[in-house]
Length: 282
Image (cartoon, rainbow, N blue to C red; front, side):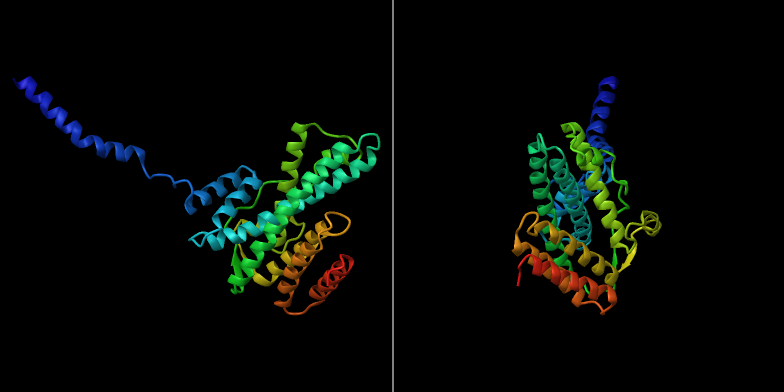
């Protein structure tokens, strides 16, 4: 009888403690798919692994709504999308050079040019839209970059020379080359965002402080310059889409109009006018 009573008491204790022990073992629940917290965590993870295309996708999902991460994510999206566009553009131009060099069989190169310029176009338009929204929303004299210094190498990968000389790389090599170029683009865009154009060592030092503070005027000047550069993608020698040339140049000009006039701003405004004239945009 005593033995049966002990078993009964043990079973009751197990039933009482079971849920509590299970709750302790599982810990905090991860963010639910589709929530802002989920996309923020996903963006951080893909960014950590160097998959900036997926990072950009996650940020795009995150900035569609107004939530606790929107402002920080929008700034991050500007830097990432502008860097992706730059990486795709350089790679597309390299394949265009490869098509000229590979006179016997330029078709595979031209196909890549079309694909890459399409990807560059999507990223450049995302950059322009995100920057427009950010300009409207932010008036603070300084901004905070709430992301880490990106992986990547500022030097161009050696495979670029092969492509430019007319040697078509295999599909597996192309995937690696594209990843290297997009990482390079985001790295250089990040350097420009903190006012350290092409100086990765200086930019890295700035990021070592954690969540670096950047002068809004410096940031706007650099992003305006990148908008003008990426407007060339839509010019007559490439995609030949004058309305998009006008869109990016207008966004760049609005940023410059909000800055004190300097030789640098005046020079860029003159370049913008030249680009609009060349594309026959009024």
